[in-house]
Length: 143
Image (cartoon, rainbow, N blue to C red; front, side):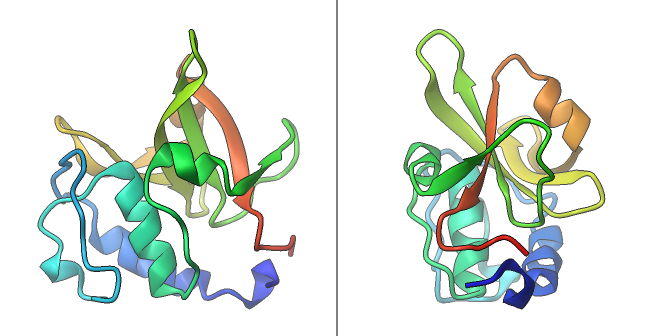
């Protein structure tokens, strides 16, 4: 499917409604329920899985598994809305976190217990020594 044919505005609108929700590691939500009010808590990979389900794109659960279904974006290449940013443990390169680029130099992420779901500037997200790479879902063609 082409990037330009995806309803990114819907994903962004729903994603912004999740800001402020608590982070709970391993939280599971009903992927078929589009009502953000029913989500009491969420983690980083579940937010990705749920948001993409709302635009009819299946993504596996777990940031580690999500990293397996993307094509890495080379440094210097533009990132597009819906691209995923991954963080890892630099010592063993084990993926442990994911966020979604939603445009306007912003990442939507379920950051952790202390923060919950937040909007993070891209430069802050990528400045971490744990930042690994950007990826685009393999099912999505460039714009």
